[in-house]
Image (cartoon, rainbow, N blue to C red; front, side):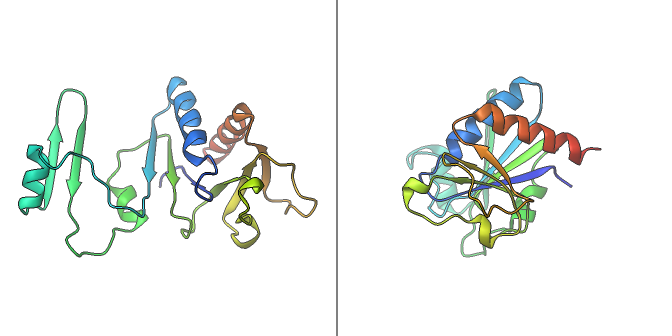
Length: 171
């Protein structure tokens, strides 16, 4: 089983910025970090005129692009259902932590990134899998006791919470 944490929130809340900071620091500490990023949009990974795109659009089920710098596998679904998060996680190599951006509906532990100034309601009151909220606002008086409230503008605090969570899950 993966040491797993979802990071969810409304568009523009700062999820990717926070993830970038967390991943950079955890990787600098020598940890292996995987990230799964869900998108509702069509993902274009290569320009249409490149060989890999031409072969993919010609009908290849999968195209692997390999170089001395990185490897990518592109799989065309061609009408098949989108793979589940569990199926996607099974494709990843082992890591100390897998962070999942998106997949709000999944029953996994989650950190909500919340900015009240965006005008969207918080997600934590209706999602029992949210274990922490990183926000630029103070905690509400009715915050459930099992939800940690973290300062989104203090990424070191979020990082310390995450490291403590990782350490406690390995005990």
